[in-house]
Image 1 (tube, one colour):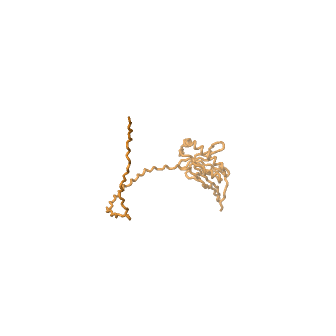
Image 2 (tube, helix red, strand yellow; image 1 turned 90 degrees about the horizontal axis):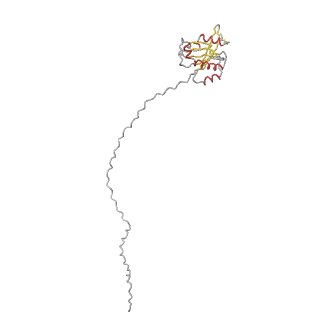
Image 3 (tube, one colour; image 1 turned 60 degrees about the vertical axis):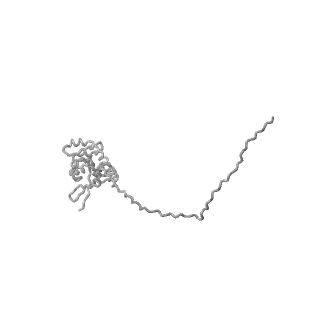
Length: 224
């Protein structure tokens, strides 16, 4: 017996299959509402919350459609603005309005361009699911296969301040006392005689120099 792939003709038919059993998409998803108009071109297909109370937007398509990412982000922004109002309106649901909503896209296939765009988006969790509608004998069923899941970047954990390490003071080193050197007697130095011995010069007698004495000038005698 072979498995036959069936086609889903409209978004309403696909939406009915999804909302009948939200656990097909993800465990503990609870339906809040569906078909919420956002603007003239965008409709929020399914709004629900998970087990933690986080709001989840589900956008559906029966064809490969890159525009569904744009519609999903518009729906995400709309819900994020009015999440406090939604919590008050749907007070029977445990909605956490402090948590940012996340997005799930469900389609038969996704283009490479859409997948690259989803991978480049930071700070928003976006999950992609591909669906198949199968028939086996008299049984029909919707099969969902997750193909991509992104998570917002986690906040860096604050580094725990470590107490300052105590500096180890170096142990005082004992100065080694210098041992006194043993006294050694100086070796006798031998007198080296010069050879040949230098002759001793006798002191020369100083020669007396004779300087003539100047005589006073003679006076001339005058005759009378």
